Length: 266
Image: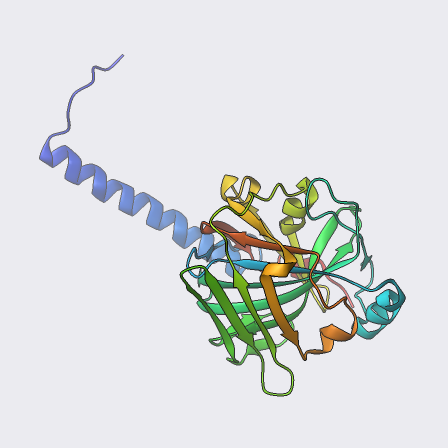
């Protein structure tokens, strides 16, 4: 058994060089395997803490569920699915708007409207039905998504957002009380993030740690939100959100983009 000794300067420099060389070779091998379709890419995706990530959770009106599914023309194998948001909730058909700042695979402010669907696993998954970004971004539906109007900011106890062009705006402002209760989300609300589908059936696979699994998030009362919705999604949902969640810390993800693309057939 070797003794424990402090490193000499020469030993430290040598190990630094060896680490850089070894892991650069592994990265080069990984790049080649990804290019050949033999390995899945893994990229960093960070939801920043400021301004805080906000979820506005709306109930889809029962009489409009079938119309929504038909209008979206859901990919084969996917169907609208009920999901619980908080641990004490009953499963419901929901549409969420998540507004946040991201860095990593893409950068800037983003707004995503999502529904929840079941796939062959029977587990509720995300399906992004509308994505906006303050900067150019890439997604499997539009390939290159042009920058659009996404504003999201916090000032003291107020969070405000404005999304979309005139005539189809979504605006909201939230009051964040200092004593807002911590949100105890249902397990399936978290694991829905494991697989995130897009409108053409392509999905992203995500990996996360306790930053999401045991996220520091609070619940706001719907009365603490003033919202105005001119988007197409307003015709499917009740006007007042049933849940409002706000993350108080950033969240680190590793994402395998377009993870099922090699397996899709036409």
